[in-house]
Amino acid sequence: MLRRPQAEQILGEWGVRDVTPPSAAERDKLRDEADLNAHAGRPLPRRVRLGRTEADRYFASLGGPLPYMQRLRQIDEETADHERRLAAAYARHARDPERWRRIVARWNFTAVNALIDAHNRWYPIEASLPMSPRSRDYVDVGGKPYRRPVLDPRWVFDRFPA
Image (tube, rainbow, N blue to C red; front, side, top):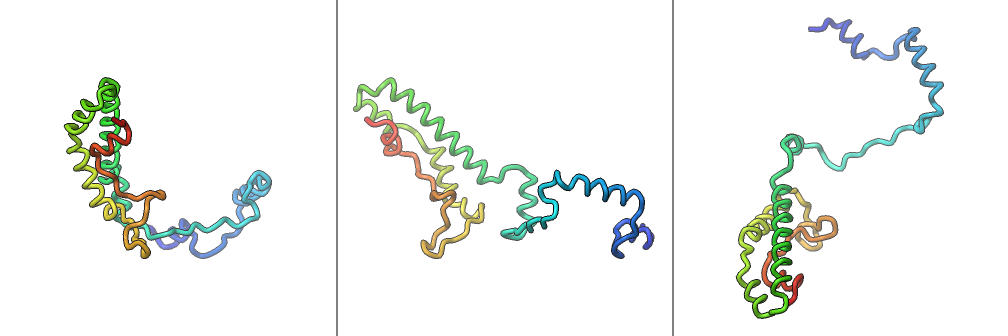
């Protein structure tokens, strides 16, 4: 435990101290380097926080990506995998439109669509999206709706027409 005078000495709670030779030398050195500092002579801008730093956000940041971030990455990876495999199949069967339609009709998007459904349902809550009073829905993220479209034959034919 610190004695009171030692705590005041460490924390400096009583005000401005007398100038000591080391602090005078440091002050002179800073004054000489003032022309190198772009902020010299100007007050620094205050940092305005847009919201409170909440404990749950702080602790979540220590644990790595949040579940919705992991889910979004998995959706993107699986969608890219489907596109690669569909591009390969399209290259083989593009000349036969009927066969291409049958292949697309049998294509299985169940796993990625389950992830997309979970994303569309839980993302606004997990990411704490604000509500828009005009649309009475959650706000757009980066200018785009947060909802992801499900993958289906229409999605495939938009990319690889029959």
